[in-house]
Image (cartoon, rainbow, N blue to C red):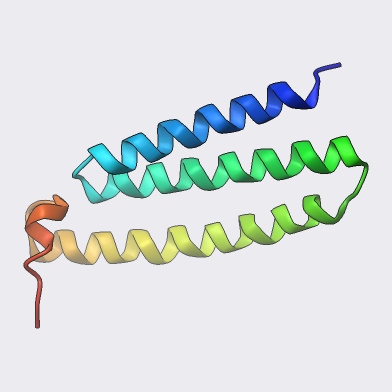
Length: 100
């Protein structure tokens, strides 16, 4: 049986990869995927702690977070597609000039 510390270490590594990717990438789609990676790393940590403590409350919270993440994906991708229709790029440096 795998111990909880390995799940937490994996969650920390995934969260770090997502944070570094979010801070270094300039494409809105890649930044969006990095945010999703960080969210799933937090879900993994919640499930690992829930399993270790024998409490199902955190696991039920993960289902709510996954539902909210699905809504975020739908809205976020809709916004990115709408921006891509207006401009030929999803580079966030160019998109910072969208005013008015």
